[in-house]
Image 1 (cartoon, one colour):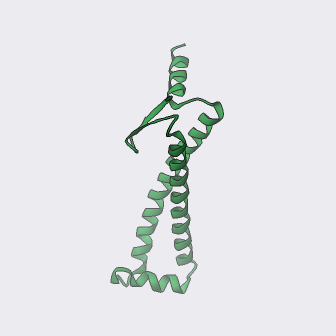
Image 2 (cartoon, helix red, strand yellow):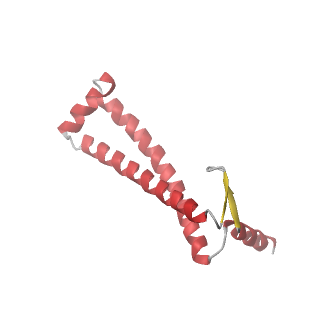
Image 3 (tube, helix red, strand yellow):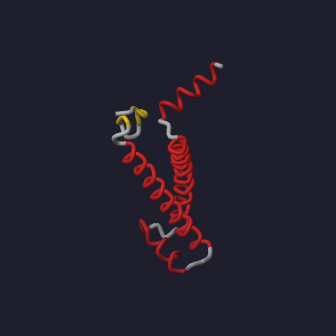
Length: 118
């Protein structure tokens, strides 16, 4: 089996045998994070366009009677989730590039290390 890299997030080594599963995991993680970002944008957008249903339901959460508190929390989650989406997108694009070049992560690292030494 060809070694690719050790993924500290999945706590496993990635190689030829499990690389397709690793790539699908990255793809689906990106998909679900982007769905979460879209949901937050939709909620916040509906709140600020004075959608009465969203405003009424937001006021009922946690019995706050202050819907803007829930909106503030969701804006915080949006910033956090968007930054995670950016990082996962970078990882996904990086692995698309590796697949296009038909090299492993380890080969990429070794190639760049060699280039820096020259």
